[in-house]
Image (tube, each protein chain N blue to C red):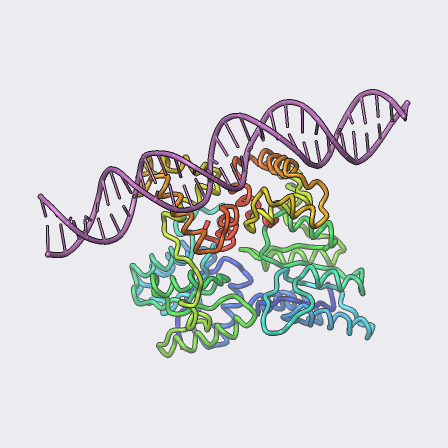
Length: 221
Length: 221
DNA sequence: GCTGTTTTTACGGGAAACCGTAAAGAAGAA
DNA sequence: TTCTTCTTTACGGTTTCCCGTAAAAACAGC
C-alpha cells in the first residue's frame, strides 16, 4: 500500500471520506488540500525535501471563490505536477460521467485510475487503491467496453467556436466575419452552414435550437 | 440536538461524511439508506413503531441503477414522507446551486434547511443542524438576499412548453398544431412568436439559440 | 342587448437560415 | 509544371423565421 498520498478535493465532505478511506486502507501519510494551487505547492515542497508523494487523488472541477487560483481544475493540476514529477500516480475522483471526457483523461493525461462519485464510490476507491498499489491501472467498467460503441460525435475546436457564438446570439451570417477576424480557418458562410449541418446530422438534431440544447447537456458549451 | 435522524444519499462518500458529522454533533440514532424507497420504508416503519425520525437529510438527485425505484429523487421522497409525517424536519444536502430551484424547495416543499455540497459543506452542515435543533430554518446566504434582485423572468408553464418543444427540434411553425392537439390555450402561430419574442426581449437574447442556451443554464429545461 | 378593452389570430413583406450545385482555390503526386 | 483530389467559397431557390399591422374573437362593464 502507499505510504504518502496527496488529496486535492474542494468539497469538504468528499475530502473527509477520501481521507477516511485511505486511513482504513493503511496509508501512512495522507495530506489534503481544498485548492489546486495548494496541492501543487505541497507536491513541490515534498519533492524538494526528497519525500515525494506517491499518489495524487484529485477531483476534476474546483469551484472558484475569493481566492484567486492559477490552477483552475484537476486537469491543470495533473499537468503541472507531472511536469515536476512525471511518474507520480494519479487517481481522479469526480462526478463526471461522460465516457468521452474520462477517456480523454486516460489518453491525454495518462491518469492511472478513475473513480466516479456514485453509489458505491468508497468501495470503488478501495479497489482502485488496491490495484494501483500493485502497479495496475483502474478503469471503470463502462470505459473498458464502451469507448467505441458511443454514438458520440467528436467535436473539434472549430465546432465549439461555432456553437459558442450561436449560443451567445450571434447571427449565422455574421459568423464568417468573426471567424476571419480571429484567424480561424474555413471562414466562408457555406463552410459554417456545412459544419453545422454535419453536426445536426451526426447528432440527430433537426434544428440549431436542438443542437444547442444537446450540447448544453453534454457540457461542451 | 436531534436523537433520531434518517439519511438518504446515494453517494457512499457523501453518506459517510454526513454520518460522521451527525455523530460528532451528538446525534444518537443515525440511520442511512442509498435509495429513496428504502428511506421511505424506514420512515414508515419508525412511525408505525411510534419512534419517528425527527429529521430527514436527503440529496436531491439519485442515480438510477438496476433496482427499480418508485421515488426517483429527493423531492419525491420529501413529498411522500410529509404525507405520512407532516412535521418531520427536512434538510436537503445537494450540489444544486441554482437559486431558483433551491428557492422552490423552500416554497413548495417547505424544507427547513439547505446545505450545498461545496468547499465548506461539513461546517455548514453542523451550523444547519445547530439551527434546526433550535427550531430555526437554515438558508444559504445567497438565497436570503437574492430571490428578488434576480434579473429573472417568471416563466409560465406555457413558456416552458414552447422552449421544450424548440429544444427538441420542433419547427416553430409546427408548434401551433402541437399546442392545439394538447389543449394548450393560445395556439396561434402569432401567439407563439409573440411569446418567444417577449422572452428574448426580457432576457436580452437576440436569437432562439441564445434563449435555449440561457434556459439550459438556468435549469428550467 | 351594446360598447370598449384585451387577447388571439391572420396575413404579408423582408430577413435569415437551409440546401443543393457549381465554381474557385489549395494541396499532393507524378 | 500538370493533373488529380479535396476543401472552401459563391450563388440561387426554397423554407422558415421575424415583426408589424389589421381583423377577429373573447371578455368585461354597463
